[in-house]
Image (tube, rainbow, N blue to C red; front, side, top):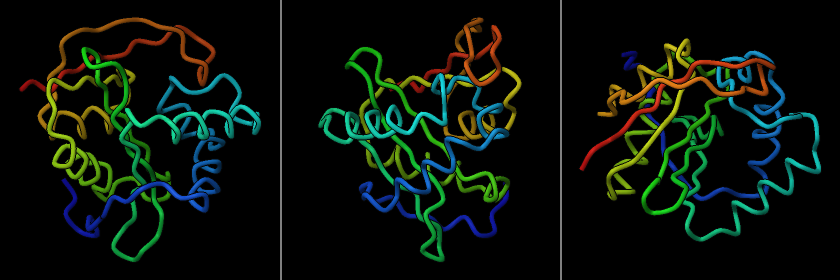
Length: 163
């Protein structure tokens, strides 16, 4: 794991963060890697409605990831019903490879101590799989599901972080 420049902090999402999240949502390479994204990343009305809904839901733990320089570099969340609580995270592509996703997920897991937690990652997304397994998640299944960002059925791993 890269250890340089991994100082991050998590904070609540602000309106100003959404501009960064919009750029992330429209990055073709980020979408291809994530695979399971919104149907149309350029539909700003859908983007705004999604973020308004999740920000208003007090069952979702939603955080902005800020690096050591104070730059917004992504987001992380825990969401879903009690029996299927899941983690999600995204880092701005220009900041990939610096250990920020691993650090952000570790910070989120320290904040949200409920277990078990679930996660999913495209089977070919080696970076995300490293982030998850470094943080204690174990692969429990492999499925094939439709991925909007690839316009194709895509294999994904289902992972679990046990109590």
